[in-house]
Structure formats: structure tokens, C-alpha cells
Image 1: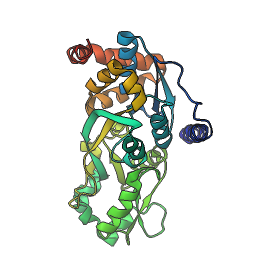
Image 2: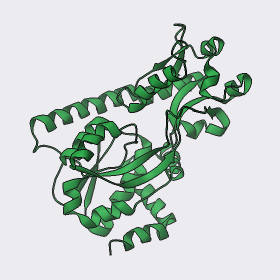
Image 3: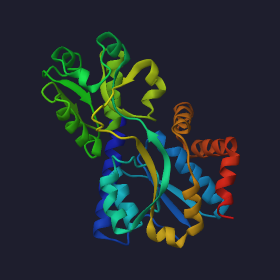
Image 4: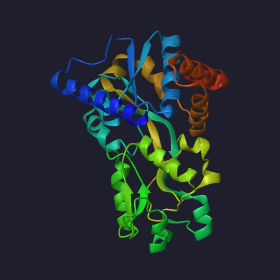
Length: 312
């Protein structure tokens, strides 16, 4: 099921990019007060999208639509104006794909939605405790590499990143930088499929070495403090990550109040985990997602009121 959904998202994204290239006037825009926001079907994306939807529709009279696009397609769409707001990309992973539009001034960064996020390599907690693996340097042992050799090719498997994300390149450099490339290789693929492979090893009580980030829905069932140890990265291949609020520049100029409201918005990683837990139980029907956004707004009313005060 996951594989079919990812295939469909990639297919739609390919078609969308082709449309942008061949017909600049085609796309999603439906009017001056219609806002299109991309996501790629991940539950972490929905809280920010639907908070934005509830507030823009209820306070400023917009309509808001969410469409599924890949990271790369959403960058193109934001730069060309086919979507107006983009609040699901992780920086620095997706920064290279977005940079050309930010540098050209066709897209703008309206600030950090949520940040100071942990990203890097994790190992099974029981493995860390049994073998004393606390740092990436500690992986430099042929016997340890055998623990993570899932396919029997003589290399330990680091479950890594989508090949289109910057972390896929960083992980290869990281393995070389720590002198681990003779013992380990990165396995690249869609996040959903890599997560499924990781969970398969966890359920079989096999050691796991993975690249990941918080918040992530894998940590709903397998909390970091109970199941994983974040490996120290003395060479600092990974800085703290963040999710920016990106917008098409023409839309920002034409919609100053709406853009200012988005500038004010800020949530936390714990808010995202809260939403993912709820979505796990209730599903991701648009009505459910909008109700979750309204519940969050009610529980954070004073914060939301301060956002609204800025546009009065």
C-alpha cells in the first residue's frame, strides 16, 4: 500500500513538473483568495497546513487547498506561483532544491515554523548498551558492521534517505569522513519503505542503524529514549534542522495580511508528534485534520490571538 501511494505521488509530481515546464499558465491557482499548499502525504505535514487553512479561511476569507507533491515538485511550484505557501520542507535537506527560487526572489522565507530539530544517525538502544556504541567513531569495528548487514554483502547497512534529499549525499560523506565506508554502505529509498524495513528489523529484534529525524512517526511506537540512541557526531556533519515557512513572492506582495499571519505562526516538534499520534488513531480524512487544527487552536488560543493581533 505504501509503495503504491509513493508511486502515485511521484507520478503526479512528474506530471506537475512537466506542466510547469511546458505551460507556465497551467497549475492550481483558482483566484486571488485561493491558497494552494503542498504536502506529500506524511502525517507530520498536516497540522501546520490545517491550522493555516482554519485561520486564513475563518479570519481573512480565503479558501485553502492541500495537494500532494514531492519535495522537488513543491519547490518548483512555490517558485512559479502554482502554489502559494509551502510549509513542509525540511532545511537543510531540501534547501538546495529551493535555493534557486529564493536567490532569484520568486520565493521568500517567512521564518521558521518549528526548529532546533534532531537529525542524524540512530542505533538500537540495546546494541548501544551491549557494545558501547555511543558515537559514530564507535562504529569503526568489522564485527559491529556485521551486526547491521541485512543483505549479506559484507557491509553494514545504514538505512538512509530518499535519494533526492541532501541527507543522502551527506550520509555518504559522513561514512567516508569517519572512515566507515569500507565497512558500511547507505541504503537509499523512500522514507516510507525505509521505515518499513527498519520496523521489520525491530520486530525481529535485529540491530538497526538508521538515519532519522525528530519529529517522525516511527518514534510514536518506538520512542527514542526506549528504543534508540542518537549517535554523537563530533565532526558535525549534521546541524540542527528546521522547517521554514516558504511563500511565492508575488503572492506575498499581493496578500500582505495573509503573509503577515503566516509570519507569526510557530509550532513545536511536540505539537507535530501530538498531531501524528491523533492521526494514527483517527485517520487523515480532511474533516478529521481540520478538527485537529481547531482543537490545537483552542488549546493555544492566547498564542493564536497574538498572531491575529498582528494583522488587525
